[in-house]
Length: 343
Image (cartoon, rainbow, N blue to C red; front, side, top):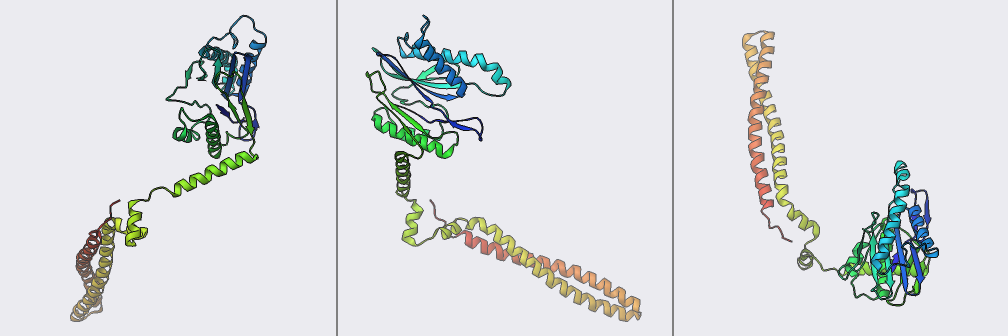
């Protein structure tokens, strides 16, 4: 089963649609399908050369002379390398990549069917029972659904639907992939593509498929098992905000201590300043009266005020800090010692 999108782009302001699926049936005993990802011009030249070698064989290798599928993959890889090297220097100077990655699948009579991924360097790997699919192009968004659902024994028509879901999921997250989507199905030993179709973005089937998949995901999400704390919440009436408060009680204890200490320091400082000012004023007045001069009175008031203020501030600050620290520590410790639920 083969699937591809049709979106190509040369920047965000030039987006076009070209088929990335190429079918070759050069003889009744063989069939090949090539999927492409990468530079569009390189891809088109590769496909044209492959078709030319079929139409006008010159005695050199082509898809008609391949005896095994891996020989066909070697041939396609060499054509790809030739085209990339031919234009590589000019593309490099322009800052453009000419690389192309290909998937070749099909069958030659007398040999098993297969699927191969051909790298830009011309070498290739083959799908297997343990790795029953190959991807090229933008793969990361559509891969998770394939890894969860796909297996070697999945029927072809189910695999086709899954491929459409994978492409649709990729389109949701990446603008470089988009419809029309193409599907092709090959049945072993038939040596021709019996089912090939295109799905437009506005088509009814694609809309129905996307809606059904989205609704199924939402329903599955809603049926996920509950957390233990949700079950206790229902039994004990403990809300999430209460639970969160209990969990953060230990972190709140130091803050409560600091706030209580600051308030006590401020109150103690104000009280000590007032008391010190009053005492200093009285002392200064008394000293000034004894000296009998206005200058002495002023000096006495100033000196007494300063000394009283300093002493009162120090005493008030010390007492307020001690009281605030003791009260804040007791309150923060009590709250932190409350039972914290474990999840």
